[in-house]
Image (cartoon, rainbow, N blue to C red; front, top):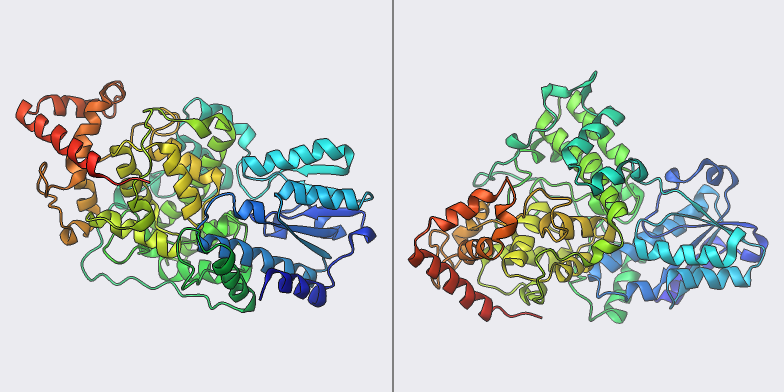
Length: 522
């Protein structure tokens, strides 16, 4: 089925609205797919809903094929569902960007008053505000209500380096989650120390159920394969939920089957088992199919009913009302200048292995392959393997940020940029992270079984068969010693390096130079 046939389906199946017959319209972005978050007047008046399928947006980066499939299929499904709730719908495909597509409709329908919700992404926000300037009183902007925190209330403190832990505590008090009066449930604000276990050998892990594709998704898969065949990743085996009903099933499945053990193995990694007990719900939270409150409500209820342990529930809720909300505030506080953040002034291109997955380093292979195949890996592979390696190989963090943005199905700029340029690469110089997140191979060995399957030896510190993380780490400490020496949390690492013998340091630096010179880049 082609793009045109889908439009034909809209017209024949739902009586695509004639915009000339409407005075009020609401524009629905592809990450705002839940009418429950829109103002009450939208629910009451049921204005015509406008959807724009922008080819310019889809081609702006070589987005992962599964990301394109997910974006298009969820958008199309939602557009078809809205008439069932009494909303007239106008679905508008365009080769132009989103703002230009809406501009075309407003010029053709001069009676139309358009309302849009503030986009979460900066570029789309700028497009729509340009539209608002051009059409003045015909275009109205309403606040984005897909997040729990008011960014304006927090962004000055976050910009000054206010840590997530204290933001999270305020959010706990504000929302009431896991609170015993004015005290945290169990007496502690977080239980991270209980959530750092390595997965035991042969420990059972429930599978995430696959969602069968239907006609709309099958059409989108064919469309992506035909028109976006040169994009990153694979389209085969697409099984993500694309409707709210399907996404809620995924949420309930996680709560029932994996939440209880999510906490202990939250940071674990395992050979050939990249999901473990993670929810894989971020893509549904990030386009509105699941709302943050309902995910937290279900998790807290599971704890209250004795179905999930406190450290697991707290860790899950912290990911949503703590970290997810915090990075959105950071994004609002730091944009747009932070896009060019590069504290270490790295200039190297991204290593080729991020595109191919081909490397002798098993940890990197295990972390890149799920991204190529599914557009997903959980937060520890992202932080402690993929971002760690990028830093240690002196890769331009903006190139890594671009890769994360195009490669992950759950990626939007507001969440990727803070995680990459703020947290994982220290590119902002320490506004978000309290220290650079780099490590030797010891951390990876501690939290995974990757090293047992690797050609390199984790026990060796230098030389051709030594784990590259081992010597690259100390090489990085030496080159960035000013950053580490001036940081209370990491200054001891400079002292440890300086205590090494001159012979050991020479081996570290020569092994690093040889590896970096041999590393293939884009």
